[in-house]
Image (tube, rainbow over the protein chains, first blue to last red):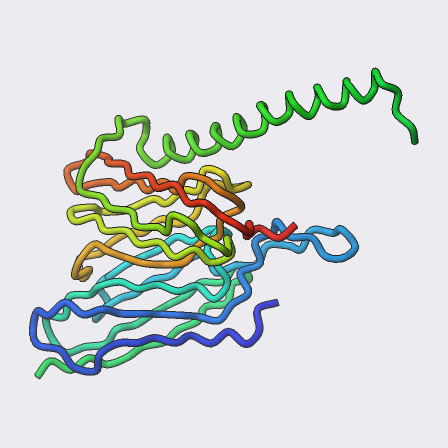
Length: 109
Length: 139
């Protein structure tokens, strides 16, 4: 069901050591809640992303458990501490077992 | 099908009774979700801010923001949704500030509830009523 899933992240490319940066993520996904019915009255089965994790150099920034009440194209904005250069990695877990990933480098200079 | 006066009255009474029972079920689900998160601990007031619009025209995307310095995790509930669970944010060691924003679905006018588990093991609660013009659960 989940096609055209495209993660988009906005991460600053550089930061000063110890800086707190704002990170925005958006992933295109229909987030079918399992509450809707089609034109014949059959319930459309639930199909959502149920977990989102953001990590910096392997250490968790946020780990979000998501329920059907999260809107279509889930959006998250949060703050991360950047002590050194490294990689911000983002992972989304779909109900159907798919895992979507994205990552971005941050340079401390 | 035609309804007699008596049947119409009975139907009306039934609907009236159902309107009392249904919110009760929803409240029970919310209370269960809170109990599962807190383990029955008492909810206090404290360092937790939940920002949500007073009036949301479209219940499909209602922007909310939590700010909970000192919180380990924050549970978000929408008491008036068919399923009150919305999301649970767990902050890790690299979280710069314990704030997060997202967009949620609300079925109708209701309270959005945030419960934060603080690092000392206590729980604090924040509520905000959101008036929804068009509900966001399809149907």
